[in-house]
Length: 472
Image (cartoon, rainbow, N blue to C red; front, side, top):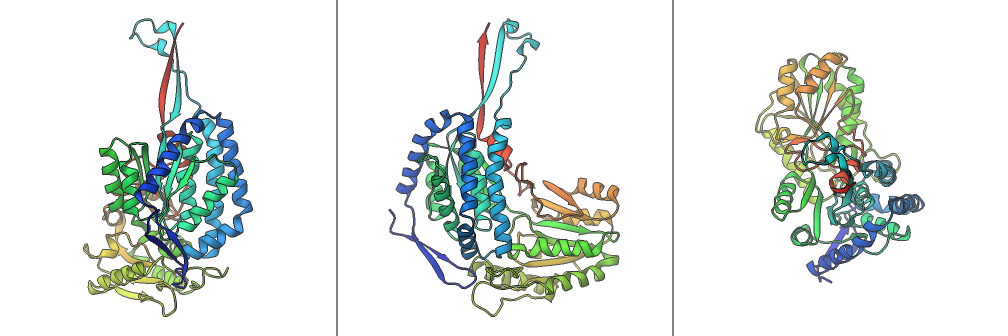
């Protein structure tokens, strides 16, 4: 074991809640070796046995729900209502992996007698099967430690692979508890592995280890690009879920009250720490003042406090570093002409709390960081626009293209604008936070490289087609 330690803090209080030994490269290598040894027996199991264990794991997650919930809230600072929703989501991802496997992995029998070459195809029967690739390594995010664990593990092992996952050092306890749940459900040794340690040390071994067939990464675009480059250079498959700066466009004919409520929830849920949170909002100038008033009212009504209390709407950021980052974003915006309508500073209490912040940006500056970078915290700039063309130009003005939202009562206009926005998904009169876990999730530009994550697409990507040709 390494002599280094991982210190886990409660972000709502700043107190230490756990001190864990950090895995050394040798520890990571041993985990990969165990996963590689387990792979051959696990892949040979009938699919019904693998899916049976997944269903059992989902049942055990339900039985351990209260303990998992307390752990998740304590280390992430996520309000208990949102943490409860995430845990149920994780359970459903595990169940969906068991259900979808029979369809994704069913294979096919191509009619090769339709082709002249090679000669004699009328006397051949071809069967295509999808077969697992081996050990798949995954990196989990700190903002959704339970659901990213489910995504990095359940569809991967359903397909017959084995998994080695590295949780964020901010939130490793949830992953360790879920590992225990999978073990209690009967998963054989080596099928699911968790290694806790620094990203560089652990992930360098996973990237360089020849026994790792693929990498699945959730995190920032900057790190994701490095992971993708290193994985590709070593012949490994890679799946990257990177950053976003998701815009919402509000037209004058929208239901303004509903749009305001949706935007506030989509921005400040989990203190704004979601890759598909609404991070910029553009409002048609004729209704700008009215919409701003609604957003200010709804944001001011948010209850910020102890994440363990049911009444809490917003909790802390994950760390002191992120509090400083928000201070930097606000200072930069104000220096370039933005006006603070609400919040704008650290809260005077224990923990890593930052006020829900609204910025009025009447003359959008191209170099204003809150309009260009991913703001992973509770800061929302509100910018006026005139006409569809400018709205689309503003929405497309960043290097990101994950998701977006359009609010209008005119569906022809909604579809025109949605078509023009460069994003992986565009919601019409709905939240940028909408995600269907069974379907591919990802974006374009710097929000999309590599294969998209989702229960079905993960199983498909981390298997390979193999053809069995029978000469009749």
